[in-house]
Amino acid sequence: MGDEKRAFKKKDMPIRRLHDTDEDLEQSEQGEFADLFQDSLRQPQSGEVVKGVVVQIEQDIVLVDVGYKSEGCIRIGEFIDESGELTVKVGDEVNVYFERGENIRGHMVLSKKKADSQVAWETIAAAGEGGVIEGKITGKVKGGMTVDVGVEAFLPASQVDLRPGGNMDRFVGQTYQFKILKLNRKRGNLVLSRRVLLEEERDKARTETLATLKEGDVVSGVVKNIAEYGAFVDLGGVDGLLHVTDMSWGRLGHPSEMVKVGDTLNVMVLKYDRDKGKISLGLKQTVPDPWLNVNERYQEGEKVRGKVVSLTDYGAFISLEDGIEGLVHVSEMSWTRRVRHPSEILKTGEEVEAVILGVDPGNRRISLGLKQTEVNPWTVIGERYPVGTKIEGQIKNITDFGVFIGIEDGIDGLVHVSDISWTRRVKHPGELFGKGQTVQAVVLNIDVDNERLSLGIKQLVPDPWDEIPRKYRPGSRVKGKVTSVTDFGVFLEIEEGIEGLVHVSELSHEKVATPKDFANVGDELEAVVLNVDMVEKKIALSIKSLQSAIDKAELASYMGAQGEATSSFGDLLKEKLKKSTEE
Image 1 (cartoon, helix red, strand yellow):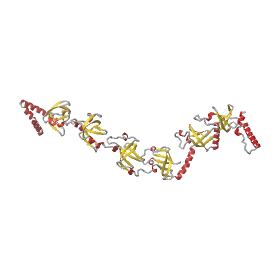
Image 2 (image 1 turned 45 degrees about the horizontal axis):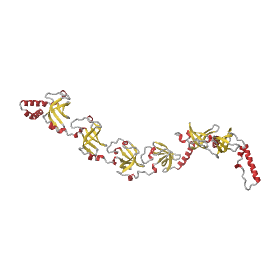
Image 3 (image 1 turned 180 degrees about the vertical axis):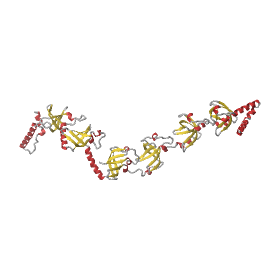
Image 4 (image 1 turned 60 degrees about the vertical axis):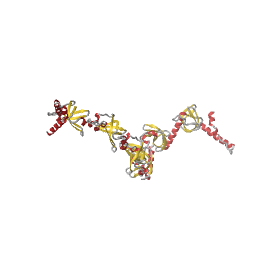
């Protein structure tokens, strides 16, 4: 009885109009009751798809009124989406499919998914092979992707896009139009293509573009691909090449520095070869050339600010404005430091201040200097370190010809090997000094033009040779240690750093074949001073004359005239030298 009551709903009762007679109303009611009675007798057919209205939502099922004697039910799982949310509410109209002979708690079992699938297949069948349908790409499978068009379809990887390959994850979740390539409902086989439709659109756009394109036009395009030499831009079914040299008025290392795939650009058609279908494009030509009036904006000696955009072995490029770059040569980076590479001072992206050294619009060059923003320390170094100033510093470098001493940051002075010692013959500075050692020196000379500072270590003390003529007069007797034996004579050190030479002819009255037979290094010998040469800083000694002097001194002593003998010894020596010269 409850089922019959549900069949006769208040909304289905006839409404009496003012002009209706009792007879009309009675006939109308009879007709309505007849229709309802016939509907109550009709039995649902398995596999049939009809529309129904959601009347109640329970914990595990959804009740749907499909106009029959009893309501049908659908498992609630068919209305739960991927995020777990319910997708239906009471009053919603849905397509339902009658399951074969199943029931739940006395309700006939329906299916929304099967209904949707059947409706979808009918739509697909109506479109047929070659037809176009809409669907959503749901995921990746071996060899391609899956597409939801009401039923699951297969989209081969080669049919996803105009250019197959790459990361296909970007297509998942996207809705597109597809062309049906293969359709077999019995096997549930449905193969689609997106590429075919894209090719048709491209060909249509290409025809339209080529028909209107001409040189000098500024057109819009999308960057499709980037190569070392430029970028390919899709102008609408036809590609044009935007060469790297036509991207910017300034220097550009690689196209990716300025554009990326997917960018929309306004470009100028520079050349269009209709026969070959080649199109050359330009981006910089869409804006005025900034070098045309560069002299009006940049003058020599002016200070400017810019950003470091590139570092090379020979310098750094500074962007002053879009399309205008200047070069700071490595030699113009520091007054004092020997910069081997710009990266020692600058880094890419850094903002710096520089001075314009020159502007050459013809060659599109601006020369810049960093060091010119500061005072050249060499111009004032003479004020801080006048000649004669005693300084102290660390040895920075040692070479064959001298040592470099750090005076202040970036400024070194050179002590030449000849200015290390007054008396010692220094073959290599490394014999006396080590790198990093702290030493004192005296400023000898400042060459501002060549940025050279000469220092001396020996000048810290008086020149001992100034006293040599007084200390070692000709005829005086000296003792010394043999420091060297050569083919031409023997060197004696008569005091620290002061040597005299006994020539082979002055070794003995007897003939000496070789000095090496006469003395060895380390022997102590006595000699007489023959001569002192202050210009060459040489002392001539004689052992042969010493014996004569000794003999003469002994004779004088014997005769009781030691003072006279001593005073006349110089005269005797001169006489001997004179005779030796005459012989």
